[in-house]
Length: 272
Image (cartoon, rainbow, N blue to C red; front, side):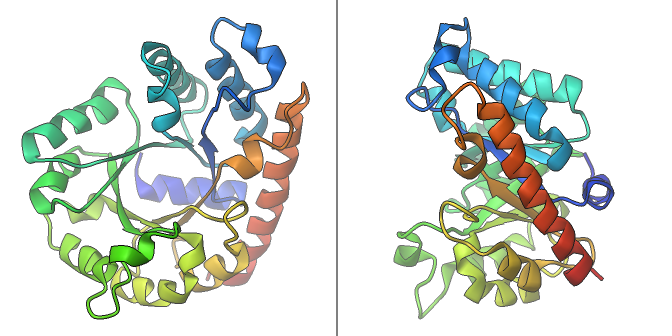
């Protein structure tokens, strides 16, 4: 999917919501546990309920890999369902991969060819040769970890002497096929978002941390939105676990609709 098409979808639907598909068996509604594939049953219901109010979905690989081969099967069924029934939604494999070149190439083929995701999250620590194999795939996007929302972000990313996140962004712009890069920026890091927009004014940002982690959607939009919108704001727990009962999909829909309403307002206010 091209980012121009993604922008068209955002403007048409008046939303830049990404729904995180993080299915935890301990949190799934009990009635789904009798299904042959509870994870896929949960994901399918969430997707069908929230699709009108979102433009992207982001399965977090950890929630599938912990289930072994069954989890991998659930992931395959989920991405196949999205690509078949909701091809206009942008898909993100939240895998945080990144290794030496030949290994990264295998990761890239897994997510871009085998599973046919539109994008994958990648850790930049090993540098250019660990990321460029992902960037070789036409029409696919690599979402580089830049500045995260977690407490430990300050250990390395926010070193006052040499801010690593700035170096990551500046250096990555020099890599081959850098136009295929997007960046992860946590919603709780809005005090650094102005600087990030100075470094990458045109790039799309994947913004986790709104809602359950305390990030402000209004502040993210005010500082981070560009002329092409340039934002995908992710919500996982705040949408998919609104209810643990048989009404879980309806409650997820209501929350997604609420967020979409806020986003429509901010698109009107901050997108010029």
